[in-house]
Image (cartoon, rainbow, N blue to C red; front, side, top):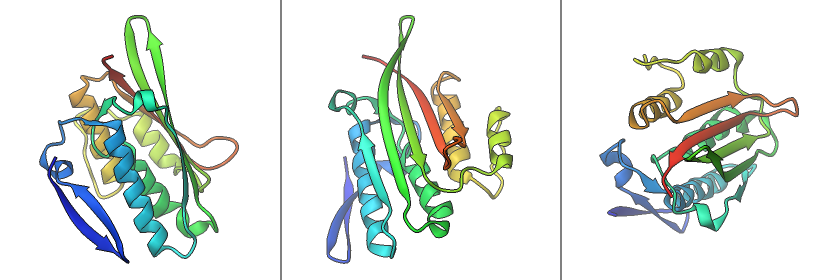
Length: 178
């Protein structure tokens, strides 16, 4: 994979060029997690209140293939929308393998302790069907939904909710081959 190195306050990061080449290619979950870690490191340098991220991903799942920016889209949104209103933003990213009949799914859960998703977004996402109109809001999420729909032929899902305990939660269900 081609990458470009850059420096931020003495920290070197490799940013893979594959993110901009094709939205239909898949990458190993471990690569997505590396990019998420780099992004969080940059945010921790920039923010006075450093966002905290806890990854609970079994090593056995890090080879699962997923679309680029699947997790990063939600981390960016949490930092963009929730961080300004909190003293300390906490994010949790977890993954499990789920079997349904003869099919296997990677279930990714991204939670934060922010203000939650706007009710209008929850309604829009729940009723989202192609073709998607992008508009000016939530472009990253709508792009991700579009790629999931077309790449997985409607067999991948994103569910958004605001848990009663607070914050926002995104659950991503991706079919995988073992």
